[in-house]
Image (cartoon, rainbow, N blue to C red; front, side):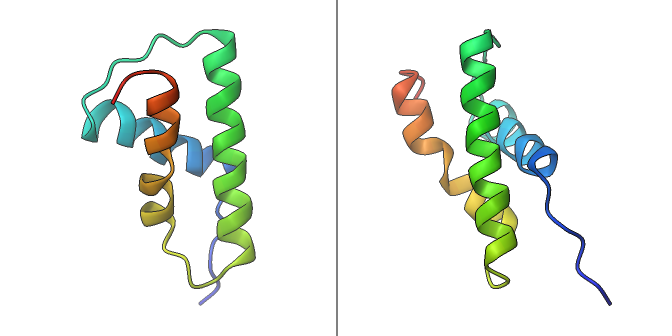
Length: 74
């Protein structure tokens, strides 16, 4: 069974769900914030594609901590 390629869109969906639903944070999507989320999603997708042993949702859930600190949301 082939493994589906984990895309930047997948990472962004996981990331936004984790921040808004799991962490109960509201976000006002400004252009700067959207660009930051897109960059973080791209980093996650690249890391996951390069390492078969990474569990996608665990990586994506670990990434927004620093991001939320920068936004003063955590």
